[in-house]
Image (cartoon, rainbow, N blue to C red; front, side):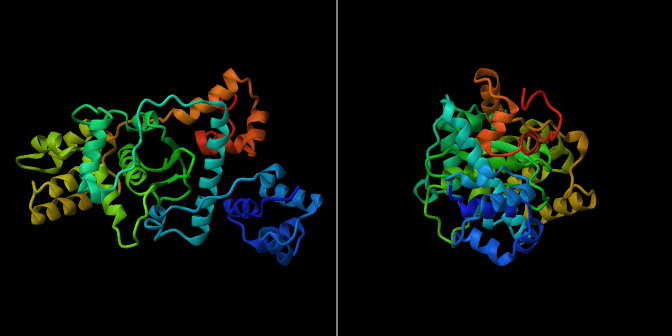
Length: 354
């Protein structure tokens, strides 16, 4: 059976290996491996087995028909500090996650009670207007959003909180045509940062993943504006930010709104409740306290725990009777790697997910 050359490339990039390194380990020439990855030659069974062994993937992975999806434009606006090797690895991990979700959903009919409708910022007037409209459409109560991950999952968004392998990326999202939106959130970040990332990516999903986005469009600014209004609606938070603002006041509001002190300060500035000069002073005070890098741990709250993906695994294990080995065969990944990526438990666990 012919191999899917693009999946072979993704597997190599997921392991952060160059063609030269992989070829040497598998006992091949780089010239031959290059031809395999470009679809010009087919490896023999022995050659494919050697490649699979050194990549630590089942050989069946390379015979799947999946067409890899490119990283979205929104990702490329955030990648300044990432090396090309890290970008390629994340691209591969994202594609494998998309493949896994598609396979898990083959046997499950999602019961979503919220609808996800794409919206154009130009048509609505602003990203903030879209956020207000979406809150009203989803009937989100006034005030802070309780569990943002649960809310997104009710709309069919698959949220994965995992260690992306770098501190230089908070997360990103992808929405493959015909599939479910998927958001990867970096587990290395604190809970307030994770919530902002998820709200930011929800903005991208609603405004950008189904639209032709111009290179000139400041999509990151739009997504931040969406996130700020969705998490901290102006009508609700303005009364709490009015009056004198200092770090103690912002710290007291952090556990209420479940956002960072920095986000609250930014929101106060956006709403015109602090002067530019005074806001600069507060930023300086945050920096002197070391809170620009890490806010006080005593103000931390537990991170949200998405459950949709876990439920998909549990359904296959508990209801359909899949063993660990069968889950691995279904997803064409080793069970330990599935645990490590999705549940941050490479070897421990109660039979995959339970």
